[in-house]
Length: 229
Image (cartoon, rainbow, N blue to C red; front, side):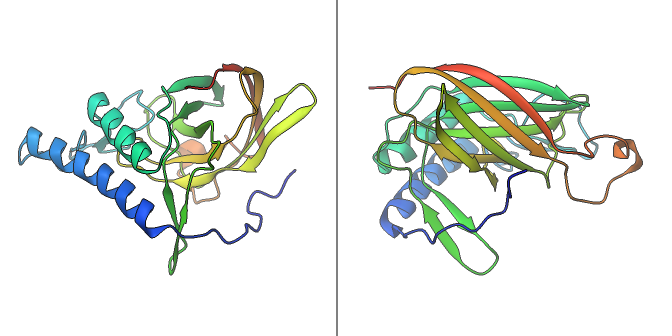
């Protein structure tokens, strides 16, 4: 099994692009919050006293993460523009079930993101020829609660070629909530195979999860990709 937490080379900072992109995201978020009134904690987010059951991948116990699609699209379009990246229509690459865990993979616009290790922060800029940002969400199918503390390795192949074979970063987003993601560069239009190796969540568990997700699990999807102009 591949090592999921392998060493990565230091990444160059680009403070100007990161600041501009994050400012674009925050500007849209603040505008959305202002439009919904003082009761809104954040765009598309409401707090409740009791856990809410939901099928949304971005829902967590006691928290509704259903974002305004218009605000989400506007935020990422602004951030992509600031980073010099063409917007990519969100595309579902595949959905699978693993012992009650919903595993869903999507392709979306790649924007600059930041990696914070507790003491330092590094910016990751999308490669110049980036195809999309791969986002994988793990949720409890019955409740919609996000399942954290796992790890995901993604491999994309086209015939005998393997254009992508990397671990995905654990990520948080105002609009998508906790997920696993990384930027992907594909050679062009075509039919590709996506293989996801999901490792068990490494955490203490309540008893309802004592008999599930105990060994690594692999799911496979086939998707068609056509670059945007």
